[in-house]
Amino acid sequence: GPKVLQIPSHQIIDMGQMVTLNCDPVSNHLYFYWYKQILGQQMEFLVNFYNGKVMEKSKLFKDQFSVERPDGSYFTLKIQPTALEDSAVYFCASSMTGLDTLYFGAGTRLSVL
Amino acid sequence: GQQVKQSSPSLTVQEGGISILNCDYENDMFDYFAWYKKYPDNSPTLLISVRSNVDKREDGRLTVFLNKSGKHFSLHITASQPEDTAVYLCAAGALGTGSKLSFGKGAKLTVSP
Image (cartoon, rainbow over the protein chains, first blue to last red):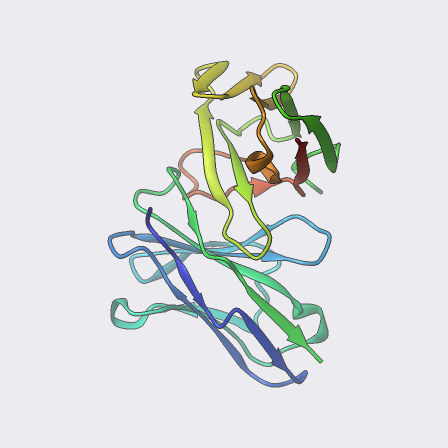
C-alpha cells in the first residue's frame, strides 16, 4: 500500500541545537500531520498542514516548532532550539481528503541530550 | 486531559479465540472512530473505521461496535491468529477538523498458539 517515509529513523542531538525531521508523504496526498509520542504515552496531535499552511496546532506545538513543505518536497518539522522534553518519537502522516485514511510513517526517534 | 482511553494495556488470547479490545472517549463531537495496528518500529496502519451514523461495521474477521450513548467503541477479532499479535491503537475525531485524531495509549494483544 501507500508508504510514508520518515528520515532518519533515529536522531541524537545536544540540547539547544536545531533539528529537522523529514517526511516523504504519499505522493498525491494533500493533508499532512505530525504527532508526538513520549515513551509510555499515547500519540498526540501536534499540527496539520494543507495548501502550504498550518490549519491547526495543539498546545504541544511550541514556538520553537515550525513546519513547511517547500515545492512539494519533504514535509519537515523543525525544532529550534531543542529542549530535553522534546525527546520523543515523532510520527508523520498524510491523507488525501482530511478525515479518511491517515497513512503514517514509522516514526523518527529524537533523543535530546 | 486524555480524550481517548484504552483501559486495558494488554490482552492474551488463545489461537482461534475472540479478541476484544475496548476504547472509551470523552468528546461528544467525535463522529469518526478507528482502530490502528502497530508492530514494533513500524507504522501504525488503519485496520477499520466507522462513522457515527452506524453502530457496527464488519470486515472479514474484524468487527467494530460503537455505543454512542456510552461513548465507547470496541474491536472484535474472531478466529485470532498469532500474526494478530501487535499493539492496537484506538482513535477518534470530529469530521471537518482536518483529521485531528485523538489516540489511545494502545493495547498489546498477544495471540498464543
